[in-house]
Amino acid sequence: MPYSRELNAAYPGTGAGGLALFRAFGRTVTTTLRANGVNNNYNSLQANATKRFSHGLTFTVSYTYSKTLGVGDDQASFVNVLDFKKDYGPTSYDFTHMLTISHLYELPFGSGKRFVNSSPLRFLVGGWQVNGILRAATGAPFTATADSTSCNCPGNGNFADAVAPVRILGGTGPGQLWFDTSAFAQPGPNRFGTAGRNTIRGPGLINYDFSVFRNFRIMEAARIEFRSEFYNLTNTPHFNNPNGNFNSGIFGQVTSSYGERQIQFALRLVF
Image (cartoon, rainbow, N blue to C red):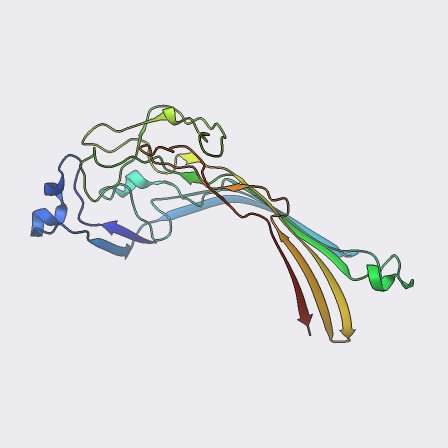
């Protein structure tokens, strides 16, 4: 897979004088290598159940239990550029559990349907269709980092020190902790921290998109479709991962979200 690597990096404690390209050529500026050559791996258990379309109804239930590991994500960059193995861990898109339920139901009213198929009301109550997609997933992992000043290793980042198991508290919003930050500490001078990459899990996701369609037949080969679509119908908060920098004043706090409810209406000509 592709990756980006800083070539002009120094070992802990060596400072600017330890920069690899400075020692060899007197070069002090950032020098990035873009190449291919790192590996990620993905393993999963996948289950799927589908009801084929009949009597106006179809739905699908899909579940995935998975693990994605690697030394980086797409176009990977590294905290410790001197040893890729130190960056090996869950990828940032590793979701352990994922459940998706989708449905489509044509209401049984109107011409050709079970109910109200001959009454004048069929022109009002016929042609309606409801659809939805429910998605639920466990949280994505993230890394506890620390400022690299004490490492004295230019060109590298730094991990925080892991001093206890991570305990999830579940707080969201300013001043609330998502995890117990006492599980981490500032690394000592002239060394990398011990936490490793993506050792904490952030908030999970629950989202339900819903839509209602109405079809109007205008001729044999054409129809008009009225669409009302509701993204995140329940307006359930989708929280981003908390701040992972040990030296930040908001370390461990979830301060942002995304995906608020959106509604749109449309007309579509199908021919």
